[in-house]
Length: 290
Image (cartoon, rainbow, N blue to C red; front, side, top):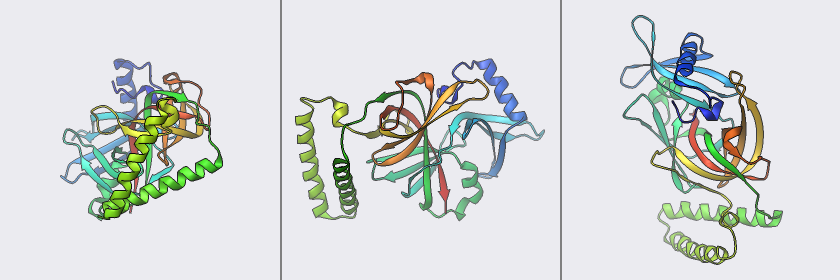
């Protein structure tokens, strides 16, 4: 059983009901596409949607008798919000026909890794895709463990000042990567000042009042992350098979928007625009290839 089935409204599935659902999807998928991978093997993807942009994906191949042979399945959620324009590198997993995207997004401060959702398009276009370039990345996450945190009190002036300081830091990071020694020195000084400010504030404030947002790797799997970000949009959706309710939220973490889907029963607290989402997510994404 996939650990993120609950995120898309399948919290009560057992092995027998899952097998029945997979058999039904094979017979009547909502969407089907096929391609030939770079080694000449057939690739087939079947999708079954249980809500808007939310569903199950089956990947495998058809045998000589036109029977679908399942390789693996996973729950998915397709985001609609442009998250990044950073250059990418796509890497095939060694154990199955699946691809991960590596993205060096400066705003996160980590080498971002996520599961490629539009794998069929990538295989069909092959070498026609511009190396490292793309029109944009639409990131989406599934979560089974999260809570709602109260917002930080601030005003328009403090938000504008924080935005300017953040943009200046990103610019310094870009210059430092290009070999600018002065930028490296300024970044070092900024890090020392930041450490001193945090050390003073943490003595009298809660950590979640000091840290407004973060995005960092979680566990040993490369595409899992711990996220803290401000909620900027909320929508309630229902799995039309199980009638379980879910929240689809757009959150902004480190100035990057990401859409997250979570089962209502897995979220502690009542979400509201302006509050913060704190939880672990499995990151997926669609790449708009050039």
